[in-house]
Image 1 (cartoon, helix red, strand yellow):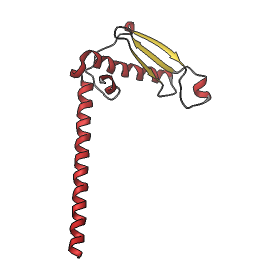
Image 2 (cartoon, helix red, strand yellow):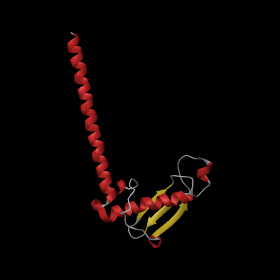
Image 3 (cartoon, one colour):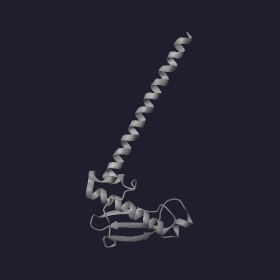
Length: 126
């Protein structure tokens, strides 16, 4: 559950990764794309050897961009793995969930106000 927060943070306070700790593979991607997907090995599978965390990235058609994205996501997942709830990634995820809940609550209150207003208007007409 902690690792689901990764991929959503632009932080500079993450644990660093060294290339010696990483194992990188290029494989064929999956999903839509037809021949462009079936003939190119631009999906990056990156494994952090000490923790065993694996990231598969096939967000773009470019292998280089996928390499950068995979490293960023892996760095966030490793940070969450080692720091847990103290991680900036986790804290940001919690803050965004709280903000989302507050927005939902306000929308619900506004809907109730509108409903009451319409009822009051109908009573005034009678």
